[in-house]
Length: 177
Image 1: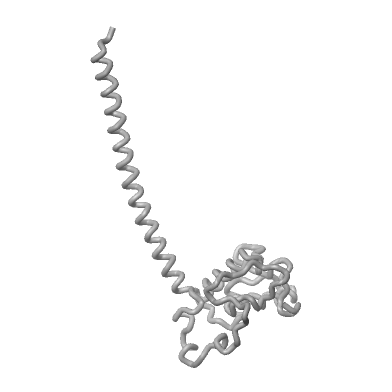
Image 2 (image 1 turned 90 degrees about the vertical axis):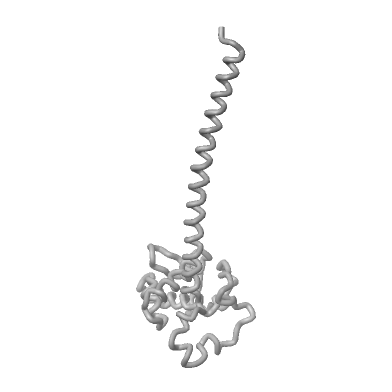
């Protein structure tokens, strides 16, 4: 029969091994957490840089036209219901006209003419060309970002990846919206 002291020593040894194992696991998890936080911070910085480049009123978008004079969107009177370029895109409802969207988000309503003519959905490169923009990666990606946001809010539909058309029920300019 084992002694009481021997049993206590066994339990103490078992508890010490368990504590040591948990400390090693804690150290490993803390190191992994530090690496994950560092990676997360890098992604936050990258997203901020991309947001700055793709912002609708960034210096990159202004380009040479800014030096020529005020932009066309600056000349138009702002509607009382119009959203600011950086404001949230409202969810589409029947009673909401496309005029509540900021000027930068009203471009995709031109998609209606193409659909009406039976030409199918537009890619972002085609949209850039239709809107008279330079077909460069920065502009195309800015349009893609806006189109994805409009899809999420019901203004546009994406029947195939990267191809956009008006959302179901959304009336284009030819239908009085």
